[in-house]
Amino acid sequence: MEADPRTDLRTDARTGVLTGGEALVRALAAHDVTQAFGIPGTHNLEIYRHLAAYGVRHATPRHEQGAGYAADGYARVTGRPGVVITTTGPALLNV
Image 1 (cartoon, one colour):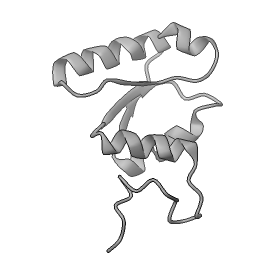
Image 2 (image 1 turned 135 degrees about the vertical axis):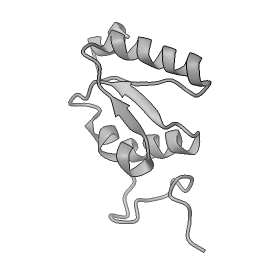
Image 3 (image 1 turned 180 degrees about the vertical axis):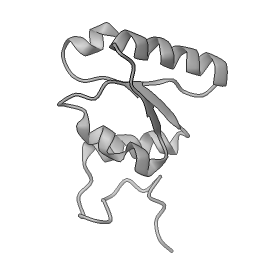
Image 4 (image 1 turned 90 degrees about the vertical axis):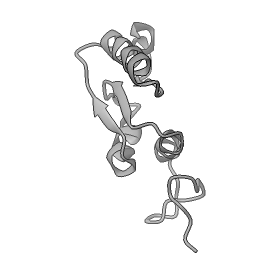
């Protein structure tokens, strides 16, 4: 029986290596996250690389603060987790 890639966090089937970005996206998918908000940046591209493969849609606002508000509104309306993906530095403080 093959392992379920949404819950088996051991390795990537293609490369034999599990990146931190893929591990995070697998964890989000395992918790039924289907929507995320944020702005891609140098230090989070490995996360973005795997979102579509695990069925997580992404919306890019014009500013990180908008991502925070969007995730909050999404969570309040749907009852599902509101997820914001930021990059390092001031981006986090903008949420």
